[in-house]
Every structure is written in structure tokens, then in C-alpha cells.
Image (cartoon, rainbow, N blue to C red; front, side):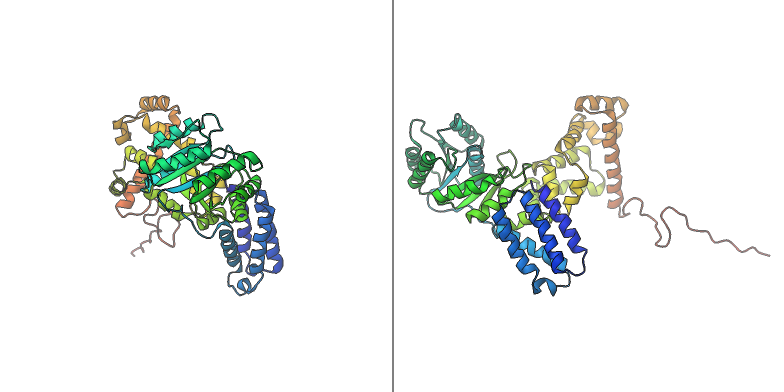
Length: 455
């Protein structure tokens, strides 16, 4: 989502780093480009103005002029002020009362129902016992959708189709203790903030539920509209936080920056991906680092810890050291990486990956072809690729929907990787580095000393 804005920031920062000293004109030029990048990303004009005023005040002061690396200092200031705009620190979902009541509100189509199920699964994995309440009686099949999602994650869903939503919520709160549920998540109908009748109903639901958390679900792809939506709901409800959905989409991402600044309430969770596991706590500092192209190593480590089985990872590492790593092992590790999310998003968490992603088009479907090729092999072929002749290559290509050339390319790359692993495990270094003398170009033999002729 933040590709465009990240690339613009990266270009600005590259020019700043190249300057030994910064004049006031240099700072103003850079801030104009930052302003343009934020506006192109659909960040609210007022939010951009306040952000730049704070950066300018610090960037033209002694904080930068006394620095030995003024360009780096300006980048640091931009990062710190962006973190402040996004909310300083992660604010977790509140745990209070028995049960804790969480009310979800937002526009129709913002992803409330799916988010309710994702939130329930997130809390369930954290040791809580949630109850989902299907209080969206406006949208056709909304109740059935929540019940289907509840069945998938093993969380009960309460509903009364003939009741009005406020009465339904009152009944659900009485039912929760009987079902031994310590969290109640209320999915309400989507509504426009200017629809007085539906907003009155939402206010009534809120009074009936007395929620500990009132979370506004905002589609991160709505851009400038998110500001008006957030302000409208804030005027009618005691909002305690935001959940941004579709953060992995291809929109410009301004809602993530604008909604938090306008409402003054923290972004608590973000939705990434379509799977029910795709809901993560929001960390402002990590998000600011990603927007500025600095990567997000902490989130990458957390995803790896959640995804990779330590025993199998250690087993794979041992095989690599012995040069016994097979295509079956590769497929197992490959699938673990896929569970971490879209590969482009995973790579984007690496510091400095922005310029790489601009040069290389990384698509999950391309990697899917590699997986299909390995799946089309027999167990013997995965363990010992040397047995794969031309006829087997044609069979594997037909089974995977690829060409024999693509099969051959994968086998050649895997063989090269195996050679490298064997050399490294033997302590002989990387291929091509053996026997190099510092004063002689690679590949040129040493000059032989001529024997003096004996007279």
C-alpha cells in the first residue's frame, strides 16, 4: 500500500544524505517534496500542514545545524514526527470486566463482519473466550456470514433475527456468562455517518452495551473520505480506537495517517490479507519505518517465530551444513515462508528493500510455479534430482503447467545452491573465492619464476 509514498521518501532522503551541509533552502526543498508525497498518498491537507510545521521547526534549528550528519538528522526528525502522527506506541485491546464488551462500527463494505471474526480468533489465540454477536440485521446474509466464520474458528455466534439490534445486544450480554464467555464482540450494520436514523440506532446500541471498546473499522483504501467518516462517528460515539482493514491493498494509504490524527484515538489493529489470521496489532514506529523505507525487522522476526517450527528449522539447518538439503526440505521451508504472507510484503520489511522491489517484480504466482514443479515430482525425484532425465522433465512440466526449460532452470539453480552449501559446510568459502591472491586478478595464474641458466 505504501509503495508510492515510500519511493518518494527514499528519493528525498537519498539527496539529503549526499549533502555535507544543509541550508535553509535545502530543507525547504525537501519539505516541499515530502508535502507532495503525502498529498499524493491522500493524506488530509490539515494533517500534512501540522506535520510539516513540526518538522520545519526542528529541522531549521540548532538540532540540525550542530549535527555532524545534518541529512541523517532531518531524516530522524521526519521519522519521529511521523511516529507521533501515527500514535507514538501500540495500544492493545482493553481487557476489563467480565465480559469485556467490544462494539464494532463503520461504513457498509468496510469489512466489519470479517474483522469481527478475525478479532475473535486473535483473542481466542490469546487465551480469551469470545462470543460473536450478529447485530447487523440490515444487510442480507450478514448473519449467515458471521455464523459461517464463527464455525470456522470455533466461536459461538448469538443472534435473534426478529429483535431490534439494541434488544438483541441486551440479550447477548445476558447469555455471555451462561456460555462462559469473557469477551463479547458486537458486529453492527454498516451505515453512513450522515444517516441520522441509523446513527441514532447505533447510539442506542452503544448505550445498551456500555462497551469497554468502541472501535471504528476503516477501509484503508478510502483515502480522504476516511477523515469525514471518522469525524462523523466520533461525534456520535465514544470512540476508543480504530481498526484499519485492507492495509495490503494497492491504494495510497493516506487513511492510515489521516484517521488517527483527526480522531485522536489510536489505531489498535490492522487487517492484512484475506485469511482469518490476517489481523495484527498496530505499531506506529514500525509502520513509520516501513513508510520511510527503513524496513520492519521486528515484525518480520515475530512472523517468522509464529510461522516456523523450530525443530524443523534446526533440522533443515543441519542438513544444509552437511550438504544433504533436498527439494522436499526446500518445499517445506518454502511453504513456511508463504504462510508469513505475500512475499512482496515480507521483502518490504527488510531495510532498504524499497529500491530492490522497484527493480524486481516479485509476484506470488511466479513462486507458485516453483511449488507446482516440485509437487509434480515423485518422492524419489525430490530426494535425488539427478534421476530426472528429459522424459521426466517433460512429465513434470506437463503436470505443473510449466515448460521443460523452467523445470531445467529450477534444477540447475538448486544444484548450484547445493554445491555452495557443501563448500561452505566444508569451510572452503564461497565458490570462485578459492586461492585468490590480493595482488592478482581472479583467474590469472601466478607468473612462474624463470630459472637462471647454468653456464
